[in-house]
Image 1 (cartoon, one colour):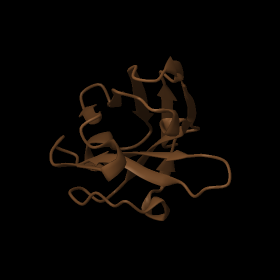
Image 2: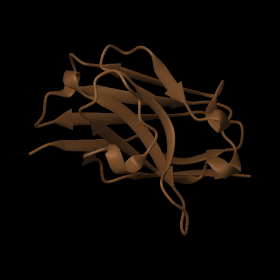
Image 3: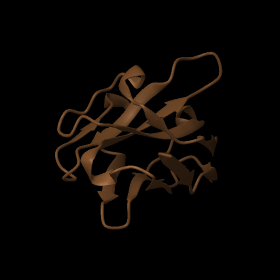
Length: 125
C-alpha cells in the first residue's frame, strides 16, 4: 500500500538547522505533488511547503519563506525539507504528504490522500 515515512527530526537550538527526509513507497512517487505540513496540539494541520512532480515550482508558507527549502529526488523516491534559522514557534510534528495533482500545490491538508506518521521537531529557546 502507499506509504510515506519521515525521518530526521529531533531537538535543535534556536537558529539551528535540521533536515527532514520522507521516503515513499507503494505508489507512483513521481506522479504526485509532495508537501510538508505541521501540527501543534490544539491547532489544525498547516501547510509548510510543497513541490510539484518535476521539483519546480515550489510553494512555501509565508512563515518559512527564506528559511526552509523543499526538494525531491524521484529516482530515490525521497522528499526533503531543509530547515534553517529555526525558531521556537517551528516546534511541531511535521508530516510528509502526497496528492495526485501533478502541478498544483494545494495548501489544504484535506486534499492529500497519503500521509506519513509524523515526526517531532523541537526548537529550544
